Amino acid sequence: MIITVSRQFGSGGREVGKRLADELGLQYYDRELLAEIAKQTDLKEDYVSYVIEKGGYHSYMFSFAHSMPLVSSTPTVVTDVLVAQRNIIKEVAKKGNCVIVGRSADAIISEYNPFKIFVYADEKSKLARCRERAPKNENLTDKQMLKEFKQIDKARRNLHDLFSSTPWGDKDGYDLMLNTSNTNIKAIIPALAEYIKAYKKQ
Amino acid sequence: MIITVSRQFGSGGREVGKRLADELGLQYYDRELLAEIAKQTDLKEDYVSYVIEKGGYHSYMFSFAHSMPLVSSTPTVVTDVLVAQRNIIKEVAKKGNCVIVGRSADAIISEYNPFKIFVYADEKSKLARCRERAPKNENLTDKQMLKEFKQIDKARRNLHDLFSSTPWGDKDGYDLMLNTSNTNIKAIIPALAEYIKAYKKQ
Image (cartoon, rainbow over the protein chains, first blue to last red):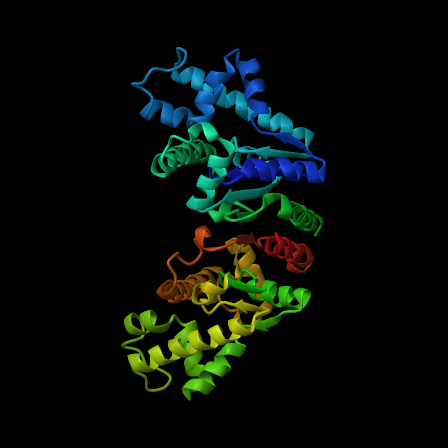
């Protein structure tokens, strides 16, 4: 059983993934993979995060080309990071029984036929969730936060669409699309786990 | 508990709705509503179906204006049908405890805060489902059937978007999006019912 969780920033996708893994007794992978990529590429984890979480190659080329990178970098190094991520996610999938959040995993390991979830929410819920979790951003206005959400989601979309034949967030690429607006995620996890088990057993 | 099921043609949305209603002990409404609309408007059920299932006012005006309508009709009559549909769906929602399939119900009764499902599937699954259910169409090619699916979905979209602030099939307008490709719908219904109960109880 392999489950991938793609998600809009602030929608609680990470919580969905973590709780599902606990409920189903599966390994959980999210930022853990960054450390492994850093190790394999001999790069700093900060830089790996910069490449992968800030949009990877596409954004790097078009948005960050004239800004100051955290460490010296070239397109080749960026490609190395993406290749390492791909290899690590494939290794993880080979072992099976896991939940992978983000990292374009749905596209990268499609041959393992994972159960693919997309988690999304309305702006109000995403703002509330982020304010609760990151009080350090309390000085940002809603408008500023929403702008940041959009930028992060755009980066996720760019990176995902490098690997995928269906666009990020397009229903055709997922088995289940979960709207977490006004949702107590903890409360729906057991039923969600049952749904996935029933789907896989049929 | 009110559940609305919107669906792509051929995705099995009707089966999802019917089985969910049985599982949860809810009233089920789909084509039943056409008869009631016909009664209230004093029109033939065929004509009501023609207006509502072939795309309503929009399609009627732009696509059928120069074709032969089944009965004499004017835009006013079309509006009457849509108003009757709206009233009947609101009456049904007022009674509560029901599943309504199609008829733009998600938008029409949004103030009742229904649990809104959208059911979709890939082309292969939709073709297989339709060939199984309607052997009389066996002379149609896949291409012809897919063209018909698209026309029916376009009509649903037009009619839905008359009432809704989010487009038909757009994830933001639904609580759950269900991909039924390669899915044995019967097998996933109990877990789906559990999911909705957990969501409503939270």
